[in-house]
Length: 124
Image (tube, rainbow, N blue to C red; front, side, top):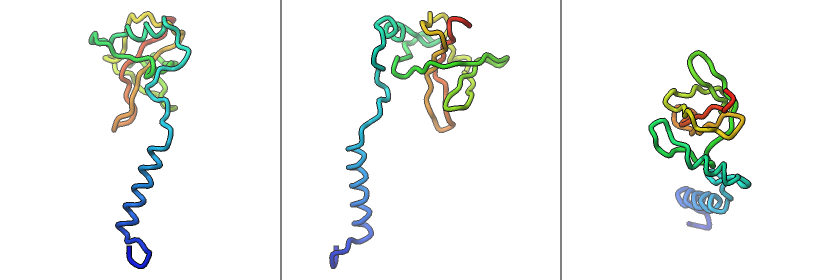
């Protein structure tokens, strides 16, 4: 700093430091945490869900209750206002779904949203 004024690089460094401090002070959203008031039976169901490949896959904190549409080319689920095709290898069958609707686990990747796993409702 010369004459009381910071150089551009000093200014950028201070700006970056302030952004980091602000991010550290900002509360983190409840992403990936188990929702409150989930019954032990429902928690157990989530723990027992297995992927079509037979692996434990689906946590209660990451599952989303969802409506869905069955079309000639497979299942479709709404994610953020858009209908997404469920890959056939993501459909979990015979799960004894305790909900009256479907359950979807999805994530966002570089190509947009991607359905990881999906379970139909017991009524369909």
